[in-house]
Length: 465
Image (tube, rainbow, N blue to C red):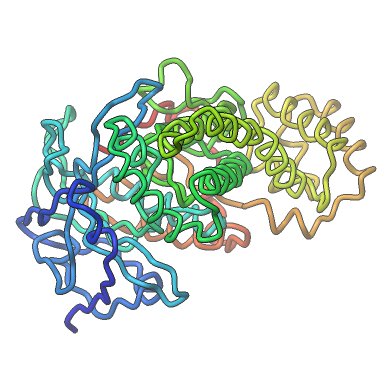
C-alpha cells in the first residue's frame, strides 16, 4: 500500500531565517525495525514506505527543513546550535485536531552539524523509541516514536563501526527555549515577535502576550518536571535547547530511570558536577524559565516593568513545582488531597529509601502489600513510618493507579540494544509489550520489573550522537 501523509505545514511558512531548507540524505537500504501502527492511525498516516522514514524518499506534501536555535548547555551559552542530525519533514493535524511535527533523527548532515556526520546509530534510536513510548504509557507529556529504520550503513563512533538507524519522532512541536534565545541574543526583535505569536497560537492560545506565554510555559514545565520526579526519571541534559515550549519531554540522550533511590543520582557521562541530578531538576527548570524570560523581555519597550513582571512569574514557579510534586507523591502513597502537613511523611519515606538504597519503583509499587518492607534493611524504621502512614487511611486503589509496576530499566535497555545489534529484536518487542501497560503488568512479563544485580548495573548513560 502506498504511503499517504496528510501534511499541513505551518513552520515552513515562517521567515527563512528560522531554518534551512534541505532534504534528508539518502541511505543504502531501509529496513523497518519498529513501526508504531496505533500512532500512525492517530496521525492519519495511511500505508508504509520504509524509504520515507529512512530519509531516502521525500513524500508528497513534505517541506523538509532543519530548525535553527541556540541554547545554554550545562549553563554556558552557545550562540548557535540547530538541528545537526534531524530534519523536520512537516506537520499533520491528528485525529484530535492537534498539530504534530514529523521529524527524522539521524537523517544526515545539516548546516548545523558542527563537523558531525548527522547520523545516529541503532542504540540511541532504540533507546529513545522505548523510553519515549514508556513515558507516554505512564501519562507523562512526551515526544513519541513512530518508526525505527535500519539504514544498512555503518556509523563510526569511538567504539568503532556501529549499525546506522533513523528514528521518526512525533512532537507537539520542536519549539525550544533556545529558539527564542537565538533571536533575542541577535537582537532580531521582529523575528522574536513572530516566533512568540506563533508559539502562542500553536501551544498556548489563551496566553495574553509574551508574559502570558511565559506564565503558561512555566506552568507546563512545572507539571512536567514533577511528573518526571514521580517515576524516578532523570532527563540527564536539561539544557535550554532541550526544554520545550509545549511542555513535552524531548531529547532522550543520557536519560535514565533510577533503580535504588538517591536524590543526587546522576547517570549522564558528561554531567561531572551533577548539574542535572535527579533532585536538582526542579531548580534547573526554574533556571531555564528565567532564560526564556530574559529573551521575552526584549519585546517590551518598558524594560523595567517587563523585568518586574517576568521576575514575579519565574519566582512563582518553585511554589508551582512544590504543589505539583506534592499532588503526585501524595497520590503515590494513597492521598488524593495531600496538604503541606503530609509533605514530611513523604520526605521521610524518601529519606528511608535513600539510607537503605531501596528500589524507587518497587517500593511504591508494593506499598499496598506486605512486600514493601522487604525493600528495606532497617525494617523497624520502615514499620514506624508505615504506622504513621496508615493513620492517614491511604486509598489503596489510588496507589495502584499511580504507581507503575515496571519502568524501562537501564540494564534491560542495554540488553535489548545488544540483542538488536546482533539482529534479534525479540527483547525489544517483549520490553515494548510490558511497558505499554505499566500499571497492569502481565504475569508472564513480571521478570522485567527486577532491579539489576551488581553485575548488571549501568552506572552511566551517553548522549545519543
